Length: 306
Image 1 (cartoon, helix red, strand yellow):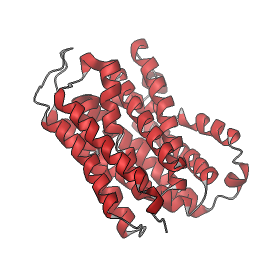
Image 2 (cartoon, helix red, strand yellow):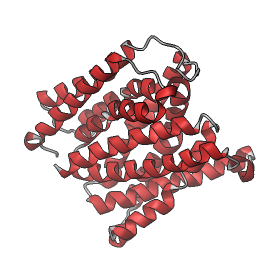
Image 3 (tube, rainbow, N blue to C red):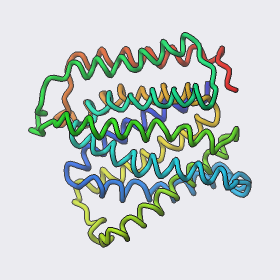
Image 4 (tube, rainbow, N blue to C red):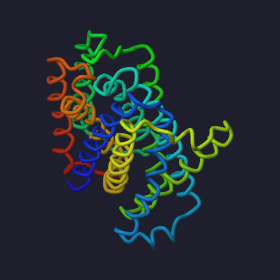
């Protein structure tokens, strides 16, 4: 039950992160959000390793684990996060959520065919409900302009969202392979390796394209605070996600994670109401998506992880 709770809290943190970045990119470009939110995870994960006393787990890391965790970080924190934030830029947090659900199908495919995880009919029912909720939300979105006057670009938003889904759907597999049956401490160390690897590649990219750091970190004050909030909430979300993947099968964690689409609506309404498109079908979508989460959690007792 702890694993499912961690996954659900991660989904909530992830949703708040996306709502915060929506505000930030109203004032600054997406690449600057990556420049802030990725490196900030390194010191935060170092602090987490100290709190959870992960020295032994860090000392016992293998080359295999470092490789998988490192690739997972690069795919998720650089490519996936950039695509996610671009999708949010064009669609808003509310409408970008349903597109991200494609990543669930990719994760489930890997869990079934590569990790040989066991599925039950309740498992499939929960996944269908979680996917159905965002589809209903998307079907009800006919407006093209938010109350604040931001124009929604469905074509570009969907394109970036699909690209993000492939990254977000692949990274859980790499985390599970890197963990190799390890516990929570091993995965916390894995989170540090992922963030560190992504940060190193990010700065290499900046050097190659010859963008001065002074220019990269020249942020509008109104957007700076939202990027800092985004970076911290992204860290919390990933810390909880890596811990949940240490306790539960990927095929359970990722469907619960996808319930973040529902929490995006809630937080978006509370924080970004003028910058989002929210209608009556959105509420129905939230309810159905959360029903899917409940179905998955309710059958954890009968679920067996190899």
